[in-house]
Length: 459
Image: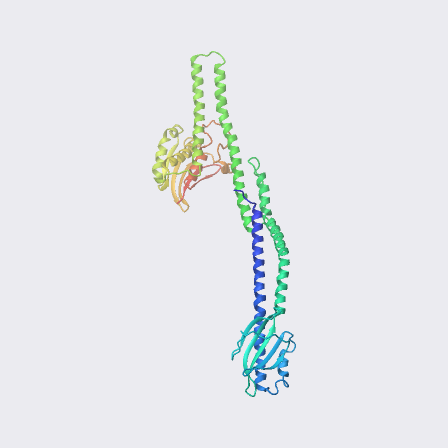
């Protein structure tokens, strides 16, 4: 199905609504011009019939009706379209008095009675007439019938003139509405065209463009703000991905280069069997490191998925901390480091992920703690949740490094050196695990020590 332009649809909608409104107003004006003059004419006739009745009852008799008709003449004077006829009610109904423009004989449908009645009719020239009729009595008691008729040709001419002018002006008015509606729609959609122009410039290589938020309607300003926030997140994600790709390439290049160099040197000439065995052992060490990096990367890719589902169970932090500490007893003893666990608490967590986070923190603490020191695992309930921390008394970490500790492949001091055997992904894994649990990981350190990493679980 072919889609239409939004501007065209909006413009046509405004034009149709404007045209409907104009036609409705024109129709209402026609109705008003048809009924309001009629109501005014009836009210005028009723008022004048009251004046005529008063004059007939108080001042006039049959004998002097024509001679003293000036009160009735005042009623119709100045109205070229008003005619008055007074006739006797009985006998041959002779006409006693006639004032105003002469009229043809009224139709027999006119009813004359004690109550005022109105009749609309047309003469032989098709002039619209409105007659008010009523039975009255003169001063001497003579019964008469009074017919007051108004010629409404002027009202009909006014209505026809209005209809002619409306028919002539309506196309121009609709055209004006269409032009104005089109300009308004184009002006209203101008910010969206700017949005489209800027969006067309955005690419994975250039995410620096942002939508202007100034001088926009509130709805579009909110939309522009949301899109800018989205672009900021995408820009940060792309930059992080690019940095991660560089770091990963560097981390993989070194062991692969070592493997290739060792193999090339070993195969360059005949060597004793022992030399081949040593070369294979060195290769296994590098391959083990590669395997560890790949395993960590696969784990990070898994927990970073937004739909990662974690089976949470009630876990006793003290028991898990002691279980992890037992795994590191040998490496701690080799450096004359004492491991202590204190505190108690329970959290909702995935047991294996929790063990992995504690193992990474404890491994780092042992690695960076001087001989003869104590590495402590503490559990403590605070206002913001349950804290499980690992602390070592070794040299502290400079403040400028703290915000970057949980970035992938980031190392303090030794840069990209791998002499300590780490992959640079341990703390990044800890951060991802805590995000999956809805918690966070914190670090505090002084230059002279100690350094504490805390797992904070929501309360």
